Image 1 (cartoon, helix red, strand yellow):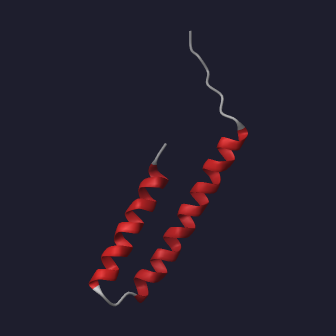
Image 2 (cartoon, helix red, strand yellow):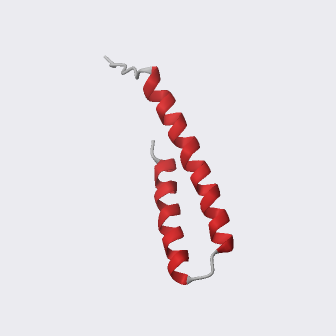
Length: 59
């Protein structure tokens, strides 16, 4: 027997909003990366973008 787990619609809408938020965050980080001038700032941007990409790739 397979047990079906249902999620409340609020959970699904939260997940969708989180995906939109992470995508917009990546776009902002890309703009910052284009204007970046220092190595320290670039490493900080890379760390933030990796974090956003990990959140997007979660199931």
